[in-house]
Amino acid sequence: MKVEIIEMGPRDGLQNEKTPIPVEAKLAFIERLVAAGLREIEATSFVSPKWVPQLGDAAELWPLLPEGPLFSALVPNRKGLERALELGVKRIALFTAVSDAFTQKNINMTVAESLVEFGEVASLFREAVPGGFIRGYVSTAFQCPFSGRVEPERVLPVVESLLKIGVDEISIGDTVGMASPTEVRRLDQMLRSIMDKKMLAWHFHDTRGTALANVVAALEGGSTRFDASAAGLGGCPYAPGAAGNLSTEDLVYFCLREGIDTGVDLGLLAEASVPILQALGRAPISKAQQAVLAEAARSGHS
Image 1 (tube, rainbow, N blue to C red):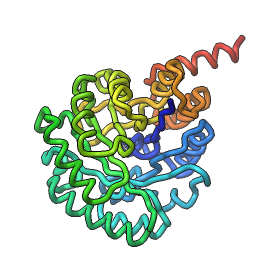
Image 2: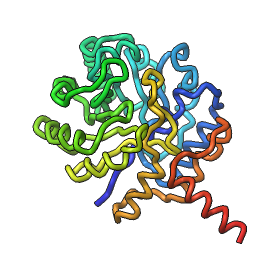
Image 3: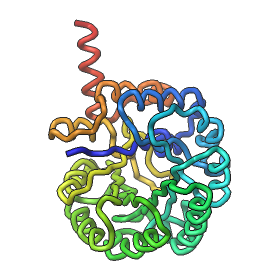
């Protein structure tokens, strides 16, 4: 069995950070992730620098990215798409949610309005990039930080709308990290009645320590694609309490012990985010990263 990891660190991991990270440091971070074996990386977002200053350098970063991996960028609207197309971006991600309260806070649209906008963005992208790849994010699939619990039946119409738009993949997000394995299994079963499992990815947050348990539940259903962020960096700026994404190190360690192939070198991965953490003035929070770095330090002193 093989698990495919979509690395979120450079985009979702950094978008919230107030400390400016220079382009050179972001590029070095990405290059270390690639050296560790990650082959799908969401590198940045073509969003207004006014709203997300940390990613205001997208146009500067994109041409510097190394050859080989599949790099994607979040595109929030038609203006963002225009900027992305100018740089030859061939893989984009569109972002909506189940909760109107969340999309209003996040992208200043209702869910319905976002789907209309993204339908137009997707159509323009298909015309400009034949064979390009479109990912659709569905956030607040289990809980909205503003309007409460989300029943799985509410997720299906949003997914169906994205399928009609013609996305290639849908990533289901536990935006505030409140889902349980039982909830994941229930939603997973419903989703499989309307879409091909190969199109399904999961985006878990570890706010309450359930991310890996939810990965197990999704694996049981046959899913093999998971979003994760090196060092557990990130979270949602509009989701109070969302402490961070599932750590890529924790996911890789889990898969390693379970005999599941990821193609990622855990030692190199654990080191990859250290300079970024230092720049942010932050210690590692990923348990696997802490353990691997501590073991490396002991070996270095022995």
